[in-house]
Length: 262
Length: 266
Image 1 (tube, one colour):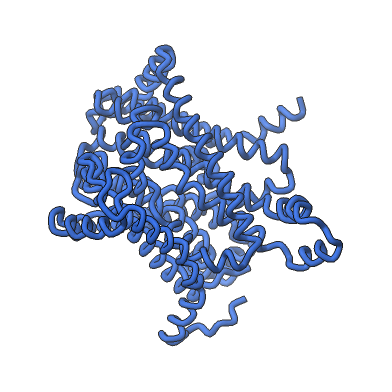
Image 2 (cartoon, each protein chain N blue to C red):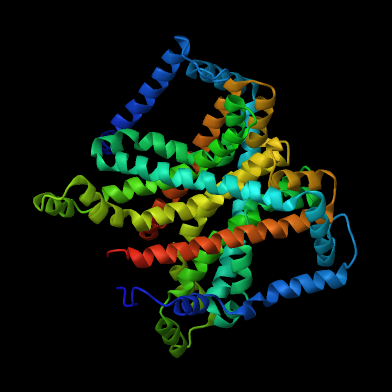
């Protein structure tokens, strides 16, 4: 009960009231005929739209597709980013011979890969994954590398003096030191993965939530467009909350830094 | 913290900028990749045309597609949208952040707006405004606005109240408070917000051109892909990559200059 009470107090009621009032005002203005935009749906119509796509099963299918693309792409970006980040963080030679290449590739806008991915994979999940993984890799790589580089050189020396094996150096020194960086990168990369999945579905693979928004726009169903936008926003919030929650439970020490960086 | 002299000569500035670059040896993997690619596949191919083909395709694009004008249109939309977002984001962020109650009242709404992936603004704006230059600008502003606005708000809220009390006891005017205390305090967060906003603005600029075929690089990218002009697709990937690189580096230079003028207080 105590816990519930604390959550109740922490909820920003004022902020939620603002949102509710905003919706009410929007509804009233539209009903009173103050609508400037022909295609602006009222909140009640958007709610009806949400019910419509939920009961037809379309929403679930679209959401699951996008969720799969985001999670698979994000996981691949995490693995690649952590491995490359650890290697680059540990070896200054490797850094010297690759950092400039990374600095050229990193600012490449993710959407630029969409036409190439379409060329190579056509309308498919692989196309989406290519558009997601390449750009989502960098935040993980850079933050992991930075965290490993931040390990004091003396720690490695101590490890060597005590003849700690290489795998133990990785497990006991490098990985714990890299963890906060990995988590910061993981969070940035997840946001990026969702944005890129939506982009890939809009201009490429005709499936998932991104395509649904474009489809309903072309079908001139504004209430469904807005309903999908609400779902996509909620998906972003939920994914982020789940990651933050999981980190707070499993790695409480690193969770503060991740939240600051987000 | 800042031991550097305030004004470096332009030669000194250039030297310090060059020193912060990673060594050029680091370009080796990229150059090797392109060389191997060229050796394995020198000719045209529907999937992996050789890099020399990209160059020919670039020249074709320049003469056929008016590439310079397209880059101009894309750059102009991006810059205008970003600047409008910076101005609007800073002003709104200051207004929201100065009042504690306003910040609490608006925070959940603003957080939700930021959580919506910017690409979805394109179909929504197409519905409400239709395909036009105004729509193009609107979606870019809406994509870049939230990180700038929210960063400004949180920076204003983190200013030590003591500083503001001191300002009040010295009877500084609102304008002086703004110039001497508030603006310097928000500069680092504002720059961070802009850094987050830049890639979003680029992506959305290209996306809106791809989806609506309004003139710009995005429209040419999608046209080349639909016509299966693989060399052109790769050529455009390189050109857009260079665009991102140049924007990123220019902003890093501007950031450096601003940070020297208003060094962050610790």
